[in-house]
Each structure stands twice: as C-alpha cells, then as structure tokens.
Amino acid sequence: MGILYQSLFGKKRNTEIFVDSEQLKRVLTVFVPALVYVAAIQLLGLYVASAIYITAFMIVLGKYSRVKSVVVSLVFITLFFLMFEVWFKVPLYKGILNPLGFLGY
Image (cartoon, rainbow, N blue to C red; front, side, top):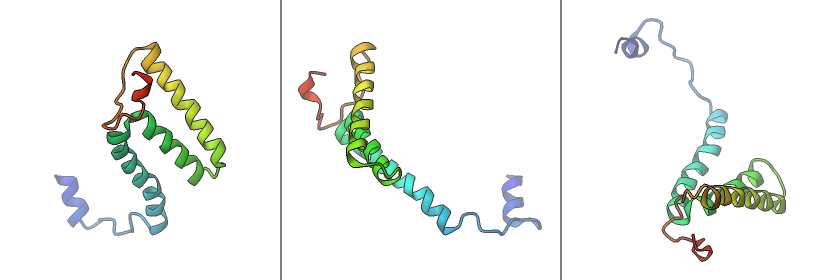
C-alpha cells in the first residue's frame, strides 16, 4: 500500500507518459489477435485455431507468402496432433464444432 500511495501522491512521482501511441499499437497488434485466438479455440478447437493463428501471424507480421504460411502451420499442427493425440495419447480440446471429428479422435 505504501508504494501505491507514493506513486500516486508522493513528491517524486513519475508523471512521464507510460506508453506512447506507437508502443500501444505494437502491443495491440499482438494482443487483439491473441484474444480472437482464445475465442476461436472454444469453437474450432486447439488445432484448427492454432493453424489459423500461425498462418495469420506469418502473413501479417512476418510478411511471408500465403502458401508458405499455410504449409508451415499445417506441418507444425500435424506434428503437434501426432505428438499429443497419437503418440502420447493426450487428447486436447477439439472445440464445440469439432472440425477434426472425421479423423476419429
């Protein structure tokens, strides 16, 4: 409580701007898609939502081609699927819509 009081009402409180608009834009560029990703997990499940998330980040922030982004995300998600579902037998959340239900998992 003492630190909070000093920072709000003390003589040496810092009145500089905490974050400028450019820094806030950078943070929101990552934070907003992360929120959408978390919501997408509920509907699409971890694998499909992660593939979309990786693809979108590679295209938008990494400036990679669409083909390369899709291929890389599908390879990684397939490896994660095999690792968790097949080899370790640890089922991860498939989502309400269960778009991978045709695989039998």
